[in-house]
Length: 422
Image (cartoon, rainbow, N blue to C red; front, top):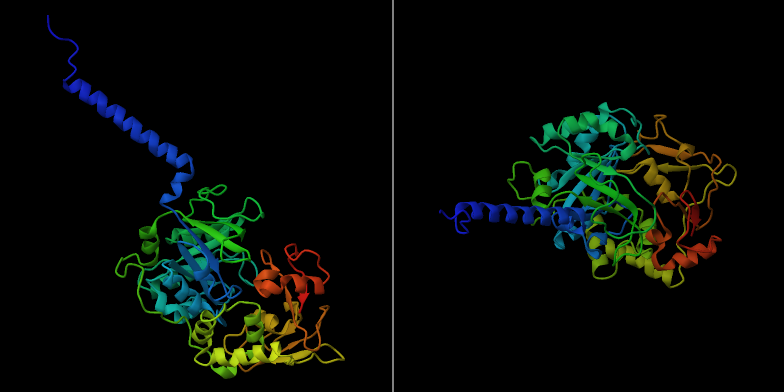
């Protein structure tokens, strides 16, 4: 009689391998269903000129995406410092252009002209939103912009950012090879990093922005939080498809020339410093001098010291009879930037020579007509709180006092669109 239960034969070895394979699959599935999936994904923030220059070194993140340009007339003056601080703390970087809806090729060229030093070192991105975008709804525009950047960079294809409800507007850009960065929030409640946010992957996206109410240690304001569906190798492949640079580099190329001191609104900059946007020493000196040239810190700090010592820096007043005010356009200005600097809203109340507020040029005179806006007078300034914004982003530790002065009981509960005087 032969042995029909050969425990040492190939049949048992096959059964053992099947069991082992089943166990491996079970482990992988359990990781994918739980929070463990995040071990390969990257968590990060995106910032603009609204955030402090050192925000990218204050908080923990795998990557930081920085706004560099908008339209054909704005460069984020904090971009250099924000990017340098991100790289100094080991973060991957991305840079984005906010579409203004002008000529798509001209805007692509403008972005590359002012961000060329970061090509193949940072992920390039088009921010496609409805606000201040004259071509919103025209899906051909982002496709044109993406193809222009791809052509000018010899094959680097930018990502495109868009809200979930308008993904169809960037279908052409995606067909051209763009990775999708989609914004969709389950709630507006404050949150930290999430490994698997709501509906992650529903649009085949490479990256998801899942909140504008992000709360991270090291910063008291809200931040946009994102998850990139890949590791650092995948991130660097978006930045440099050829893999020639490894996505890094030790130099700190500038996205734009440092503005001359005659072009800087020192009073407004001093106010920003008092709000905490440029950090404390020694980081404040580094951030200001990097963004505005050597000596900027000393000049701004002198204004701050004068104010703290009882000095009262003056600001121009609107004409008493009509509320009208004329402003000379500076290099890099947009109407939005002028409105923020002067505190004069709404944007529709501004009159420009071309008749199109998205087309202004240095040296022109633009006029605020008053409209129905309430304009602060004397040395008072004002801002309008945007969606996802908060008082702390602008006033830091002074938020409670500013809220009280504006008749607001809780500085953490300010509606978007509220005008704040200070």
